[in-house]
Amino acid sequence: MKLSFGSRPIIAHNPFLDLVQVSMLLCEKLFSRDNQCLSLELVRKKKKLMNILLTGRPGIGKTTLIKKLIDVTSLSKGGFYTEEIREGGKRVGFSLMTLDGKKSTLASIKIKSPYRVGKYSVDVDGFEAIGVEAIRKAMPTKELIIIDEIGKMELFSKKFRDVVIQALNTGRVVATIKKGRSSFIDGIKSRRDVRLLEVNLENRDTLLHGYLFYLI
Image (cartoon, rainbow, N blue to C red; front, side):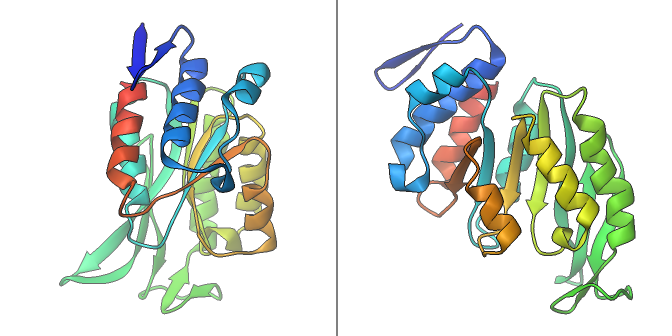
């Protein structure tokens, strides 16, 4: 398969190398080196897939990008994404959906838990049983590991923090990650095998079409 990005041709033989090449060209097109765009030559020498992390303010469209990617990619995939729970037009919590069809409540104003983010109580045990297990199941067999998101609610779980590191070590993660800082978050963002892309109003449509372009 021969693809092109502007005037630059891309020869795609291996799906993982294709993912690296096109994501690098997309990164070079949209972001400066200050935003952690590694050189294409460095990635080619490594000959391995880089983890791709999407960051940005809440509501900017990170989960929408993840769900579109899930819909169009032919690569095998596992993991989870999150969605708002709304009642009467108001957000009352967040649900978790695994890519193999399991669903649970991640956080809600209706449950009791010692773990809280704002008005939402977080069901850490339920998250570990469904979300963490979905990542573990994906690591040995899937070409992409989807994690939406690496955020404050999920980080209450040590099991989640541990499995995120294990997943990143495979080089096959596509995830969203909170924009704020912590020692764990900063450590992930500074990894050499991570490409960090900030989603904003100016680039989100191009990012979406970029993902569609190289994963169809």
